[in-house]
Image 1: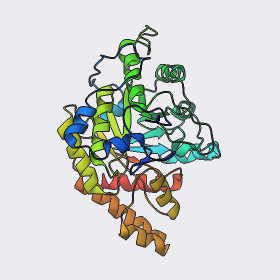
Image 2 (image 1 turned 90 degrees about the vertical axis):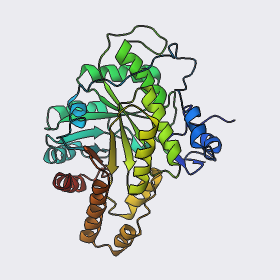
Image 3 (image 1 turned 120 degrees about the vertical axis):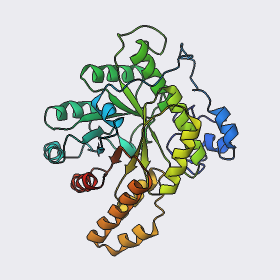
Image 4 (image 1 turned 135 degrees about the vertical axis):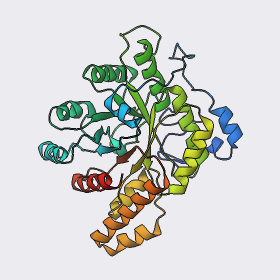
Length: 359
């Protein structure tokens, strides 16, 4: 069997499209898994797959009490959070973006700082967070860390720097394939989460050596409930939870029934109560449709697509608000929504205000 181009060993990354690989040909995992029963998937995903570099393979991370402002708020019944995705490519005017981010900040907002989504070069999320900490009034920050073009040493150094600067919420993803720049992967997100739990819980490196006094962090991962293979997404999430993930943020949701199927499946397969945060990304243009598709998200909403074709922006915004309300009405006890506007800060400001009214 040929090797996965991203060197993933814990199941398909978020880049599979049906049974195809986003990079080339057929996904080696989907070829094997797409026709498996739930019982077979349960057995196949019953443990974390680690390579020979991991000298400690029997550690069982447990859920910890929430220690950051984000995690404390996420687990309280009386709080409603808006997690806003800060997507700033290096072509953005940073001064103007800072002013926009100040205007949409608030004590109910958490800024999630992206790390080269879609393979696009963005400002370093750690450097951006350190700058924003002194200028914006938000509840907390989440650093997105992609495994693309990072060695194990890079990851450990980066996380230790972040924790010592007070940034302790991390969203770990394998990362998107770049069509313009070099691609190399040394870990998938599951192994990276396990490594960082060794680091934060025990102060141990990948080779089992003591490298630091343990520092607390909270680790999140991503999932795609819009996949055509819900059971595979469920068991991918189960494996990430076994590795030590403490919260899950989904890809944008447009099909409420699929999301409910994913939630029910995850509830049946894991005994750990890990918060699931649904993501919403307004579709206001054909470009947004193409971005969603590139993320493996199918927007099968004829009503939305028909309104898009009219070009009437008021009607388009109203249709998106209807869809958002449908998601919130159908899924009970939503404590947080992850909002992505793909870098459009004006649209972000609009939908943050909408979310404050409907949450």
